[in-house]
Image: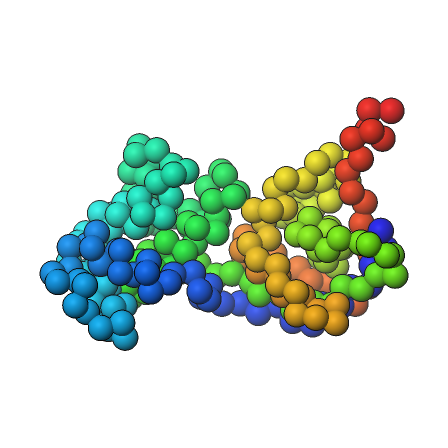
Length: 224
């Protein structure tokens, strides 16, 4: 598939919008033992939660939030280990399971804000881009977008170094789902991509407008 790509902006932020809902905060207030949590006004919930978090040691708070967010994907032992490591390590970038990078960032974000530090300051990238094609029926998904815009990155970018065969369509690329945290269609071939700073920096964008050929993995062709 052939695409025309235009990267309009790569913006750094430490905030992932809508990562936590009011319902999440209310449940966490209960877990952090806020007295009479059900009586707290909605516009005060976040402040009460942050005050409650600060009554706990950072590692203990991390374990509580991790258990709430990821107990269906992590064992008790894994939660215990991560709650210690995330005090000094950027687990949202370092953890081996790429699919967990986004929720680990959300946990880190909440704790960093609650403690006004004490946890690593992790950045993410919001990429504003245009992606157009003349091919009818072309599905624009995370894998396609990643393969297209990565062609504007420098050769020493981590994506090229770790996933060269995947980007070229030689092997399947399931990791794309975890690398691209969010893909939002804005209309008129306009998209917003959110990913970890682990995968690219502004300086690694060497082309902002270019044509890209995207090759999807073909199992039948690979077996031929």
